[in-house]
Amino acid sequence: MRLKRSSVFMIFAAVLLLASGAWVYLRDRAGHYECSFGESEYASVFQWNGIVYDENWDTPLTGLKKGKPVGEITYTKADHKCPRTVMQDGDATVLDTGTKLYAVTGYKASARLWAGDRLYEAHSNPNAKTLNDLLDVAGKIKTVRFISGMDGTTRLKDFTPEAAEIFIREFPKLRYIPFETLYKQTKGWVGDNYWLEIEMKDGSTMTIVYNTLSPSFNPPAYATPELAALVEQQRKLIYIK
View (cartoon, rainbow, N blue to C red):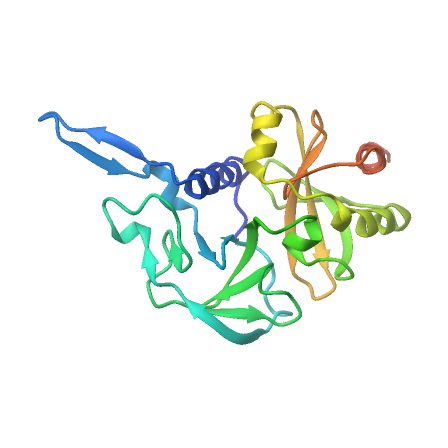
């Protein structure tokens, strides 16, 4: 299942909220205070080894295999009316307590983990310096393409082989910056967005978003001038018949 554009941005915001430990106090008519995460429980994320992972809802899983077990979920925020404010290792938003975590064969555990039969990818990693540190995709990308930002499903156009080669080489090298930092620096990450899909050699896919005003990506990194020009040049090819 692919999420619509608004749903994906809701997840970005929700992960940002959860990672910061923010929560909301609500007062009833009697003047008593209760706490709530509002809609943030709809983002399925968990923390392990200091890394926050979110679910890749729509990737084909047939080419991926489970590796060794690494742990399990020990706390579910959705089970608590007033969950603890800062996520700890083993905390999840909606995954059931006791859900087993496994390595993904061929990927570093810091980049991808299985939670039961569901695939999760690193959203934030305090030790990452580059996008490859976050995602572990160097040498694994097959191609990159534009997809529709309206439905997150329709494939519009693949990069040309020459452009894909440059993107595949340079994208993992980009300096990782936490999304909350990027969001603040760009005053809300305003501007038009292009939606792209990275396809791995194992058949799995990853959706990334490119902001034209910054210019920058999510997974979060600023584009080099070369990559920014490349994305714009390839975008124009969609409309050439």
